[in-house]
Image 1: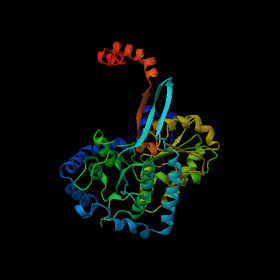
Image 2: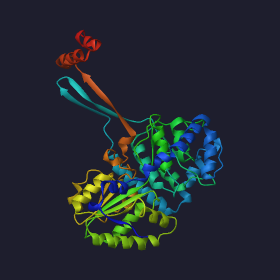
Image 3: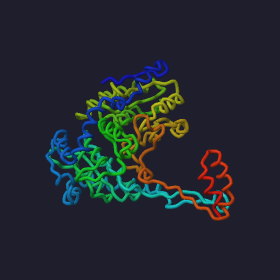
Length: 432
């Protein structure tokens, strides 16, 4: 593998746009097929779910076996290695601690003028569907990153959907992670058909108000088509990361950290941005060596990433590196420079910012406590990582005393008259 090394200042605008393109740009090609599956599930319900689960996952299901039963949930912890179970427990505790700090108070009111109060009240959303992908592996970490904030927010109905293996079994570590968060409504379905079931509902699976979770290009396409039918949550597609490094960065550690998101799949985007040409060459060499030591299919994934959506970009200086990061707006950003905090103030667009070479992507992905479900495809320009707030909604609250009403009613009357709403004005003028 020979990772490409490109000089940012020498690239044209078109070349830069091509370099920074995500695999999500190819989603349009999947829309037609995805639309057919959505419509089939909408029209046929459980029978379509069963048919597509057989077609795409090789599992024979029935309406009675769509839902994971209590026996499977109880047995999940016993069927995984104890170190894995303990790691999930530790990580869930850390994530819960972080996300409990995001929980707002139930009611916030302030007196804007004497006798007039305005504010808001927070409440959990009524229901949510959490999608735990399994296409390129099993990811219990994705499960607790979604389940913890949903449970902290107090969502009354939390549903989990996750693809089964050919025997119809869901990943036991994922089931265990969900159960630690008090979730027992778990269905063994995945892909586009799972999105359709959550959005439209079937005979066995009532619809939800919101869908959260990362997925393939097909899952992302399904969410886009379902926009307006259900809240599709933040854009969370194929993994992506960007590292800013300088001549003090350890090239082996940099290469190791770049491989973290690259091994997710061939549609990941992984970029190293550095002003040091020497470091760029050293990291490229380390990437080639370390990638060759990976087992399949991860080795092939990495090779495709660094000859496709990934690469090494040489810039004029660290300020330009920050400019590139802001243009990319990556899901994960690691500042692996000598003074990472000095560069932090220049970065505006990134879903997650990890500082220093002792804070690799994998540490944040699993156990630090920050959420690892993060906007992708450049959406970090306007979106934030998943949090407790994503599972809540706010209502505006207002209250006026008689004196407070009298002090501001004339302003409202003037505006109502100007905008041509006589009933608005009359309701104020004739109130005694």
